[in-house]
Length: 179
Figure: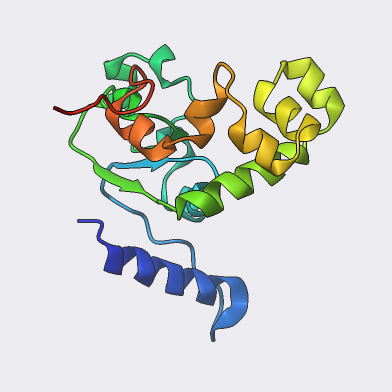
């Protein structure tokens, strides 16, 4: 079973492989379990993804890394031993088990600040070519204006992102009044 202790052990071995230990580098230890990295943007998931990559044969790694897992059917997804992508819970459920699921959470305010500055770093050329709404707003607005701005798509990236992702993509708005 892939446990937190096993991940730490693999990380420590990676340090030795990168020359921080004694002896010649050894090839990465293969991970036998099927692993799904349920990756939220701006939480360090890309670093974890890059760390896990060498532990799987290339042909067993799902090529999709963004939010398009629904272009694969269940049989195709079952054929991969490592799936790592930005996804919400509904897309996660498309991946047939058994598998070990990993996700990384980050303090929500730090995640939103990181997202804002990441989007601000996008070039205008990329923003125009890909018609990116979030990066356009981040470049056009100051931080407080950006956080207060309500436009299609943006609140789902900045307001209660973890709740929206874990509950599913059809959840919108604020909690209903009780009583």
